[in-house]
Image (tube, rainbow, N blue to C red; front, side, top):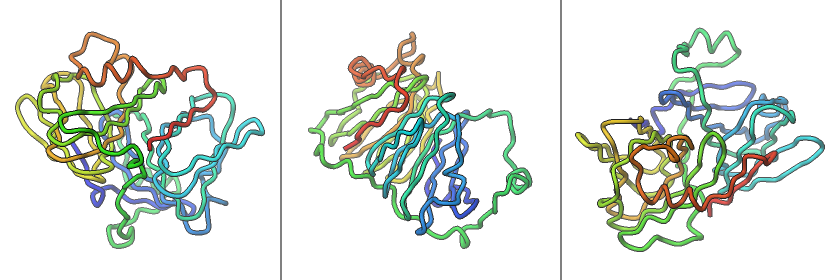
Length: 264
């Protein structure tokens, strides 16, 4: 399944505009920071919650244990849950795309969100959001027929940047592993064993685990960033070889307080 950017639900809380979609057990959230910056918003509230996020525009700052780390656009951030307590700051106009595991059995209603201090925005009130195009072009374009992928281990997930060259993915192995991803450039076809789905830049997608299996195909150059559970990569699932190879070359970041990965 996939969700296009105009179809994301829009909320406002403390100056932040949040657009989100629930995709099974993970929610995709796009955070838009006001021009005045994140001061006084919930983004700066100290937290022990795990983070898997990508800086789309602007700059994010991670703070914990007296340490401050700047994270520019085009970089992914992973903060494991628990200690140390951390908080984030962002420049005015910054946009962050995050993936947050949730309990899929919990219904997220407008009434519940309003009770938690969220203002529900309609399409007009929410306004149009700019395309989610990240500065990943520095690495150039993958050759025809080739998928170039880089994976970072961010337990319990692996985050992968995959660049699809023209006419690539059509002969890839079928994959049973679940993925939650964002198309940052171009257009892809998600072929299932019984159906096809077209996703384009700015779309968020979820490939469920198990049958029917799937594979990603690109007629023209395209780029995606997605999360895959590590247990699905190292288990006995059917898995595209390009994903298995990328994970075998990934650095293990399990012991790091915070990991930042350049996507460009």
